[in-house]
Amino acid sequence: MVHALSEIHRALAPNGILIDLRPLTGGWPIEVASSREVIEAGRVSDLPVGLEDDKAANESMARAESQKWFTREREEYFPFFYYWDSPNEMKKYIDEDWADFVTIDEETWKSIRSLWAVADADARMRVRVKMLISRWKKS
Amino acid sequence: MPLLKDPERTETKALHRFADFDGKRMLEIGCGDGRLTWQYAKSAKFVSGIDLEADDLRLATIDRPSDLPVSFARADSIHLPFGKEKFDIAILAWSL
Image (cartoon, rainbow over all chains, first blue to last red; front, side, top):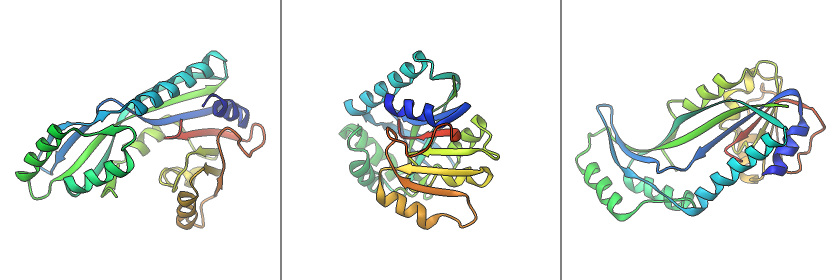
């Protein structure tokens, strides 16, 4: 990652800007969302790989800052929602695409299915992913 | 596949709060299928998007509107196939 930041520094013009946009682990909420209400059904469990990825990324940016390649100007967190038509579709996606870094325990699945059984007709499942955006100026 | 990703467009809004893309020379690292690229490319001078996933790049190339100044390449961020000081803004798109 540090090598990539060195390359970006090289490719950017003087006073160029780097935007770092990425999801962060942190037990993303799982919600049953309808037009009438949003109910939290539980949270995903972070797996070690995801936590290590975050740590490595943060350390790389800190290294780039200490090397005076970039200066942090601002940062924000914001939610990014994934929606599915049903718990089964959500489970299939998570099992196939997110299996390396999050999991959902059996108790949470029970809660999801219980809430889904009595949810509004227009309800969908969603996961609220925590996102970081930060802006860095080439030093 | 999920039914929808970010229908509220919070990501696009955040991106535009953090940078002005008007007339800028853009590098997007981890462009994937171009989902994020399309959100700012119209105002940029040009966009060079790179990714390692050939299937995603194929989709991005197919979906690219002909009037957008965008090119895609399969490349690794640790060996950027570009000259020195070529870009005004670089975006690490879910890729650090």
